[in-house]
Length: 108
Image (tube, rainbow, N blue to C red; front, top):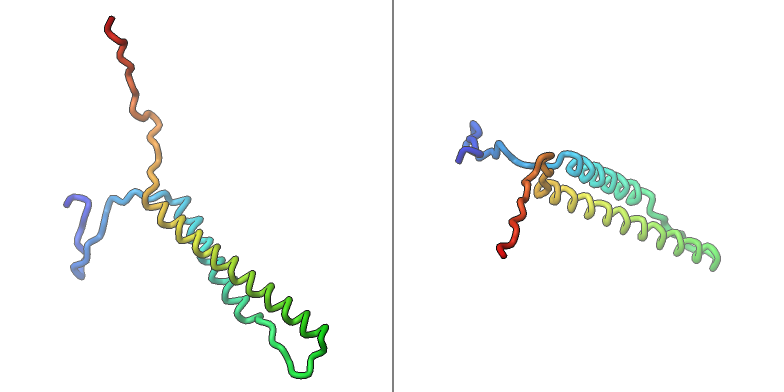
């Protein structure tokens, strides 16, 4: 219980959590950018009109497909960012000295 502390509202707080801050920051940045792109692409959805020619309909369908593809990429960006955040809680840095292994000579 030495790694835990009580918050004033009775919640547990973990005091000694090993988190790789660079990976965590990268994951948060990816999530923020992905959410921003999703919001921008949601606003820029192409809208069709009545009485469009065949060429305009084709162009509209291509723009709509492109917008859908960009939304998918933004979703993948959010997913990878979330994955990085999860990895950052399990990533531990190696100590400079590390554990030195000693090899035993086989007995003849």
